[in-house]
Image (cartoon, rainbow, N blue to C red):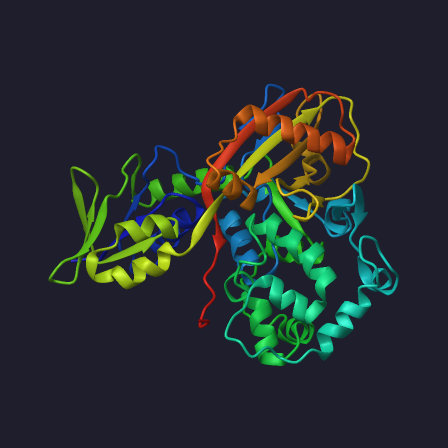
Length: 429
């Protein structure tokens, strides 16, 4: 009899796992189980009344490295190549990123010249941070926080402004709690292997094998920094779901898993409330906190470890303005926690993907709120309403970007306890 694989979770990870399983030379029977009625997870695109695309989750994908190349290959296999909207290397959204510090926007230095001169909000040229990194000895601990790692190698100013903002933008997390080994494994490996992160990234570049196709070669030649899809990123999970159906994968929606147990014969029993499935293998693509509650009693040690990975909530507020202009052109800006604990950053959607602006076109920006700020409020027993989030987002857009007129369209979406906020330090007491 053929093998059966049950995949838990119908977000992009579960969909991709099911897709590649179904394409294996000796493909098993694949069953994808999703607790809600909708596939796609965080990725969700909606259209406004004028046809503008608003992303309630991710809005772009980086093509860099082997993973980026494989994702482009996947897009090509799904027949979405003609829908790709690239951000080429010479585009302002690829070249310009900003920090909002001291009540003003500051362009992050780019190129070698930018490293040689002082660039606010940094008090000294970033070249000094680079020289410090090259001469700092290798760390001796098996893991450390991102902030400790950055402060040791790049200095306190870079750690508190740039790296703090980066962790808020990527993880909505606190750099003083996140594990560098878990969140930035390539930086950790570079230091361990070559003593220097800069040397490690330079000497280790280009070693992994990558797939090759026309769209991958185009992305390299044009130095794409990111890409999206014309109708929004949700086109990707939608195309995957269609392919899974064509390939005979069983997709179960609205079927939350209530428990997992390992049977005497070595097969897994997947409980779905009033029914169950049997599987030779189970692939989990659900949050760590969810999986920890599904594991059987004999997997208690693993469940305890998974339970230590906490998550934060993030609010995504999409704003559209008529007859408005941005003061700068770029991908967007991040806000360090010392400046505003609630606002993580603002993405300038219309700069990167003007094709999604609708007709007549309107200026689109997305304000990201939450992270550890939500945790602090929840610990105090305070709740944040959708209206309060809308007001805070509009105030941030007015203060930080000068967008003082009321938006013509606004969407508020909160992702509850979705992003891991604390990765336990590995090997540390």
